[in-house]
Image 1 (tube, rainbow, N blue to C red):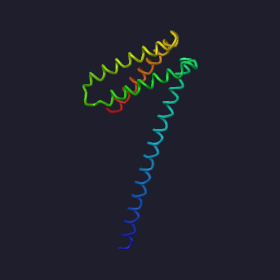
Image 2: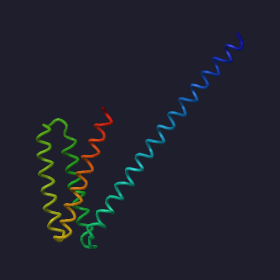
Image 3: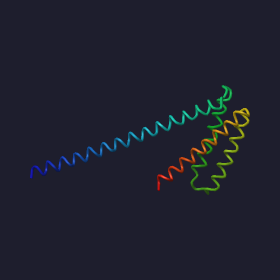
Image 4: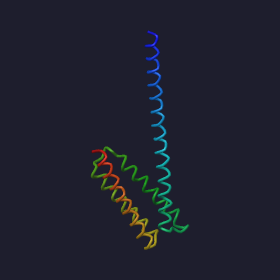
Length: 137
């Protein structure tokens, strides 16, 4: 009877350690993902500024425009009660307004680059969505 208790206790301890280790791995992966996302966002902002070759006078207004429209877009996306088509229409109108403000701030060459970057981001988002859809199947 004593060996049976020992085996049972060893099995329970093993399961407990395995569960704790697995939970710790998940927590580590989760915190890495958040850190990686923050780093990626910062890198993208720096890349945007570098590729557009913003002057010192343009950097703050450009940042302010992005922040303003980002906050407005969050409000639109958060409205889950409204019609999806209406939200998309509002988001598109908001993007048009943002583009007009950015165009007024940037030179013709910079604005062309801005549109190219937007298109690249759109394609990357589309590819990511397709990859997620493939993974879900």
